[in-house]
Length: 251
Image 1 (cartoon, rainbow, N blue to C red):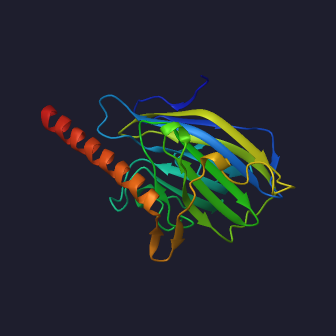
Image 2: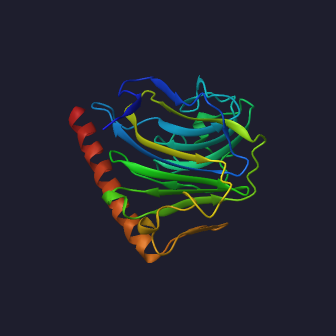
């Protein structure tokens, strides 16, 4: 299987994978990508994360998970390390940037995220679905199990891209803690002139019958999604306990 490794599991690494051919999004776009973030051996935690971009100019190296903070456009960020200790991680959120270098890594997206995001898993292949159409951004994810079940991560309305032609790309980065950041599959369809066709929604055979909605008070989940998230949290707790045991043994 072909793999694009954005970063190896070493400290302070950065990597980008970008398309240098411009794409029109006058009628929106759909994208799928499979990624896996694997905690490096000897690293206390996985860090720092990766990002998917659609920008006015091709993405370049910088401090936003390997990408520049001066980009003009849209980023979907998978943040694996909680600098602020306020959110559960890995945390997925969207950011629409005007090109100003206003990135603050210590805030974990606070102040720039388009709406409340969601969490995904480490050490397993995650399939992410991104759709932008009619000023609406929709992001969904599948957490393994043959990608048979999806949940909607977030939906943001009134998202205005200030340009109609741009460039897709990915970036990844590590810091004091480290992980491999791998891409396994990328599919993008731009300029959705016939929105009823193509990848407007995740494949019907893979969509849960019901979906989550976001309100000002937070995220509401169906029972099926609650069960999946409880299982996910159980795994997270086990991983945290294993990490604590390893740290105690090292001390």
